[in-house]
Length: 245
Image (cartoon, rainbow, N blue to C red; front, side, top):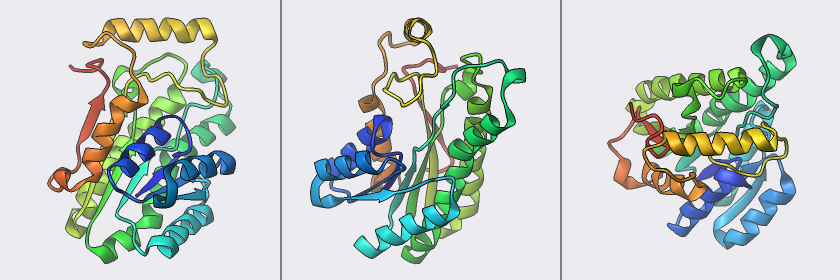
């Protein structure tokens, strides 16, 4: 299994869950030190692969490293992403920021999929899970239009790939988390706004508690396992019922 952005936050929780279920996990992350630390924590069943998901050569090298180590790639969790920039009105977003957000959150999922696809086709099976966001369904928080647009594109990519790759026995699904507070290198909201968002989201959910990375890990394990062999093209909103309608 390959987990992009697997060195920290949600990706780390996914990698730990998959490793705990017996999978061999490649931690594909741009942060070499954190990737190495996470891989070391998981032991011999893990591999650190420094990867820039926006770079075609880097994603190809990641795939080659995994194949060199284990000879196969059974699954890909396209988790790398993030808003990366503080909230801002759409007419103030520089083109460079727009391009960067789409590159990490959407183009990266495409490039990583293309990188692992030959190995999955050769094996005659595979599982791809694209991490999207419930923000696509809510249209908020306000000020994150590039991120929300990218996540909407990722949902479209999921459905298109499920249709296209079904003949190869490759299942492609999406998981949309709600608002999960995690430490990030750059603050998206100031502390007061972040706390207000936590409280508002918790009140709007059917389940009135704050979501954690571990709340998502079970769904990821299911979609990467044989239990989901007849599930494809689906979007799982794991958000405490925030977008239940």
